[in-house]
Image 1 (cartoon, rainbow, N blue to C red):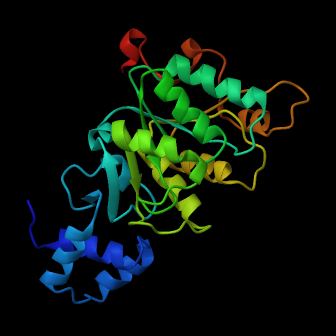
Image 2 (cartoon, one colour; image 1 turned 180 degrees about the vertical axis):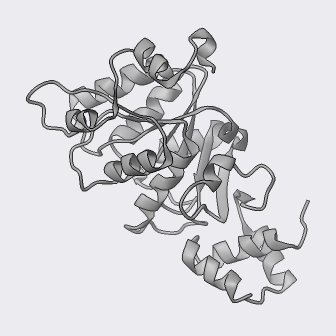
Length: 265
């Protein structure tokens, strides 16, 4: 059903201003004039599906984020946002320990749950693939336009998630990714999750650390894989600062208060 209220206006402004929260907000404050025909034409030009913050099924968890997106562009099963969601974040440069930790933790925790990540190189890609291998659903949150595959090497993964899982972005069409899109993307990944898993982090000045800080601010449990002595990562430092150390699936589920049967609360 198409109706002309704030919803159509939001969609038009999100497309016009490339998903930029501040520019959309300023346009709304200024009561920018948007003729019905213009808004409708914008809506009808979309190849993807769309959800707005005015929709009844907009996730309550996402409303708690800093600057919650006015509009989400998406392909796939939007009902996945209603499930219990495990976020996995981590470095793009991955060692064998980080790869093995990602696969082992998700193999134990992902059945019955949904995996969310950012489809970046490294840990994100390993996480999405691990979820699919374990016959779980996964959500990719893009830092580019919904129709722009980045990194391009993940085109096959993008198409698979788009067809059988869920791809979302606050950026419309083929918007090229900009540097500030990625930390903005991270706030969506974390806000939609019920816990955040960190298999490997190599540097404090990274998007992974942005995600960890967002999780802490939002009160989301942060689960970090310990790394052996001599392996150059920041994982053990973060554990020392209060993150949950991933030892076993039983221990993690006890820390999170998850019941064992069917991995449900």
